[in-house]
Image 1 (cartoon, rainbow, N blue to C red):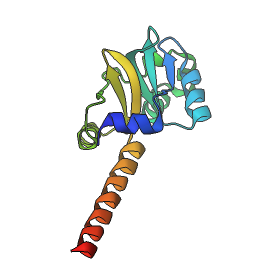
Image 2 (image 1 turned 90 degrees about the vertical axis):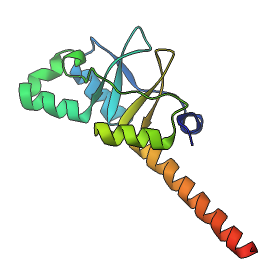
Image 3 (image 1 turned 120 degrees about the horizontal axis):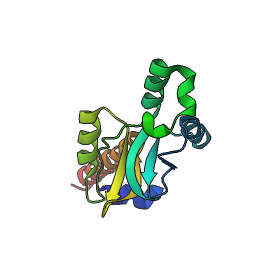
Length: 143
């Protein structure tokens, strides 16, 4: 199973925010969309960073509520791991586990093409395991 299959199923829309938008604006986007991370972009679809709940906690711990008035670029994670549509679910699980994060932007030709979350990956993996178990049951029943 590939990232392309996940995106084909769930869609390719990604919540984004500009580098110069305030941290407060990023937090509002997280709340309104009920998500854990927002991709920070420049030129509409070039990935500049990612801002997650963890980044918010660090900003608040280090700078207090004053951080909310500063640009999100002050607190975002700049070194963003990405994947491609041809990556497998296992590839993505490995990247997420190694990096200890739950959101992975999908990049195509240097541009943002989607995002996968740990929830997307787990859901797909469970579907795969259930399908395999059903195939084994059917094989045993007809043997």
